[in-house]
Amino acid sequence: MKIDVRLHAVPKKGRDFSRTNSEDVCVYTDPAVRPFIAVVADGHGDVRTEVNVQTIQLARYVAHELCDQAGVPVQEVCANIQRRVAEKFCKIHSGAVATRIIVEEGRLHVAYLGDCRLYQWVPDASSWWQRFVNKLRGRLFPFVQITHDHHPNHPEEYARLFPLVYPQVKDPAFSFYPIDSTDPQQLAAFGGETTSGLNMRFLAVTRSFGDPDMRPIVISEPDEKTIAFDSSARHIFALCSDGGAEVVEKVFRLVRKWKYAGTLDNILLVLKAMTPQEPVDDTTILLIELTPDEV
Image (cartoon, rainbow, N blue to C red; front, side):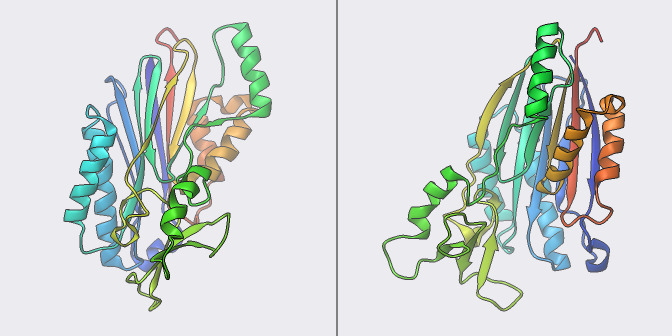
């Protein structure tokens, strides 16, 4: 099995004006060495320049630790990372989410918390039956989203958070936002420090590293999955921050129809063409191609 990668990254609109940098971080190992490890982390914090710098440092720390400690059980790794983040970055209210993949022969292990996503596209297969199944599946599902976002409106997250957000006490410290919604888009913390003067803080993810003023409702426990794949077929994965998710989905729908876009370099060209020059969020997409050794 051979592995090839391409990285596409664009900072969000206004970075030049605010003199800040992208808070996305991508780390991966040598594609020729097994296991292959890749991490995308997405920091979130304040718009102030000095906080932006520390948020990037936090995201880098998370990404490198997840990559360097790939041999340690991921639950233990994430608990250790959160402890160190609480010590190293105690002066800021920033946080970071991340997704890590480990690729071995015929298996892919993914661990994630937050909303960095992993997508899979199988462009072909070794047998006529597999090609037929993939073609039929491709018409219904042009791609597979392997991870799910840890957002307040996810059913499992909503069930976990409800007793903490609406405890049987008066004036809880946290709330869903919109308030009293059964489909909340964010969490709200009352009494947090903000630059706007409002005594509230909002967060769209329910699992992350950091975010001290959003705990204990925000946790650092990852979800894990192991995906088996056919080593005799070609596979393409996209590991991305939430800013790149919409672009990946559009491109994977297109490459189902455009045969000439099937190579990794052509997919990268389409990604670049379909990414806004000034996106509303930092955009980071790592394309990962797995091909059989004999191809």
